[in-house]
Image 1 (cartoon, rainbow over the protein chains, first blue to last red):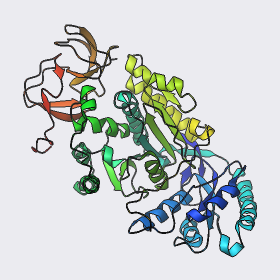
Image 2 (spheres, rainbow over the protein chains, first blue to last red; image 1 turned 30 degrees about the vertical axis):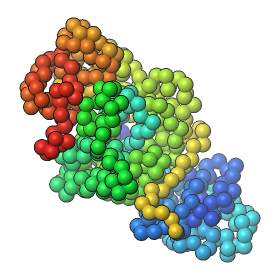
Image 3 (spheres, rainbow over the protein chains, first blue to last red; image 1 turned 90 degrees about the vertical axis):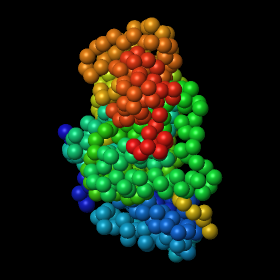
Image 4 (spheres, rainbow over the protein chains, first blue to last red; image 1 turned 180 degrees about the vertical axis):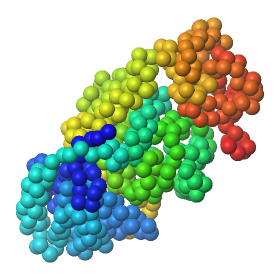
Length: 385
Length: 97
């Protein structure tokens, strides 16, 4: 089965065709924003990092920015730097170039101030946008789709309806040969042994356990024991019996197939099928990590309702809470609450979401896109200097 | 498909979840491995809580989402409430998965 997407010079396929402006450092974020102002099809990353990171964070910032630049949802890229930052505009531009896209770099200190940079930047992105409009969608096998999965603002309907429903969707996509990303490690705790058992090799299984161990250790170091007292008394009163059950309610959204690969934050899958990325459960950092890793479309389940969206990837919101669907119509794309009334099977709800994935991948706009939700945050483990 | 008041998430599951509080003695229709069956609830099952779709032996696996969520600490009869009073997490108890 196909979707209608955009073929890139490196052979990858996207669902959108953005011209992207990347500030390599927080100092050039203002100029980047001004460059895109009022230009349809041109967007920017509200990046505040790029200078002053410690330890492994600098590499993570670079990987994330390069991941957005090389993501097949992007047609061409303008990188804007300030000039004295650690992560220079040229370094980011050079890292994106192997994708074969047109990449330009501007440095505020060299160009001579913000106004000149904005003027020059606008003329570059307008040119890029003209070229972008000449590229047409073409049929692309669903096996080339990379789907990110996420849950946020969860309530009791998440584990019973929306997550299992999109689990069915994930299984359909994997059967089509596509890729599904599961993430948010802290939500995995308690069921990691069950996910590890589904790993294609013992090494991959061990990587799952190691990722969970790192989060537990890090949480304990800051005075929080995630496992202790979890499920919380409120969860137990609501019917959750064990931590396995609670975490499976999250994991179920990626289906029940074998786990092919474990990825570090913002890294790209090298395997098809179900892969797992080690990310925080923080909604925006998680979303950013998956899109940087190459996700070209995201399924996001919610009970309470959430507006999150990505600068370059469509994010489809699914809720099993009828009330949330009605009160947050602005934000919600799909209502699967009929599953909880016995009026729709899980398989039917999952198929409905799958059809929406194909439609959105082929150009249909999501609610978050219509609202211009452009959320971006990079996961860090250290303070900035 | 599952009855109106109960959801069974995965075909492998041996528990169902009440979608509203269901009284003791209530007979609910549940799809168990493709077959529509009637289960009589042995006690009240609060909304969001689980009950057994078939007898679960002492020490047997309680399956939800198609995966073991814990082990029973006593024989659980079909239709009985399944919760912290008769299920433990083997991992939490230090027995290993």
